[in-house]
Image (cartoon, rainbow, N blue to C red; front, side, top):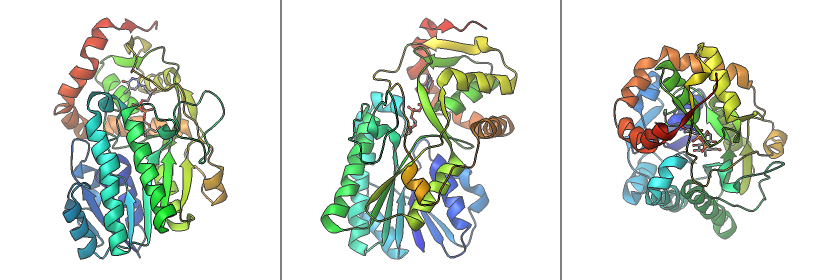
Length: 342
Ligand code: DAU
């Protein structure tokens, strides 16, 4: 199949592009705007691959999207392009509405116009909102609470409407917190790992007892591919790792693996509207034949080792745009933070 992956230079997108190329009957066009977290260094190993093409473009640019789909006779679309970081969405919500809602609308329109036969939209478990107990099922009402999750929920609803209105063959995946190599170091795990490697403080929001379900990027991409190939059109599939942990426990594991002291943790002012817990029920995807394969302990240690062994990759990022973002997000907080007892 000729597949268009949007956002293929990002974290999940780049792993997915590599995975799809391993299938000899697929070719992949990667359309990415290369904004701050898009990085072609994530794909140097496949750059010259005969079945791979890269196009720099924004998913909001309808004429460019139409041209790429037409020129490459695209048959399937997997939309990984998104603004994804909650903290940034609190500062510039409009950018999230633009990419995650309008961009999704543009993709849907153009894909339907050229007769794409499969459209998979990569979404997030955050659309369900904070879950105090139990786990979210695909049919649960949406309760997004940040500009990021609200924008993703808006995109999801549009995608779903294309099924009910036009029977356009859409699929939606809602993944849990994903970790692994090549993740931009604004997210919790790569931020804590790289800060620890630099002996810098680890900014722990609130009481550190927020809970997330951690999913290896390899399992997440396997889930997306599985849904793309075998999913029932018009259906939503949750993808979770089954590794629910408190943030403090994850920080402890990172520090232990690196042999760094717990005193590096600093409790700082909380994220506004911080969701306490996410958890998803993945029985739908499991019934389709997918199951996670990476244990959290193994996956986290391998990820920490990857950052330890690829310092040029993240040091370059941390010396650029990231510095301004970091100062804005953490400067004041770290001055007012309190140390963790070691
Ligand atoms: O659940 C899936 C979602 O997971 C994805 O849709 C999002 O794109 C992704 O960013 C992630 O959202 P979170 O807000 O849960 O991820 P983040 O890595 O920002 O934070 C994870 C937890 O760690 C959360 O409870 C906030 C906390 N945290 C995060 C950062 C960046 C800290 O305590 N300190 C930090 O500096």
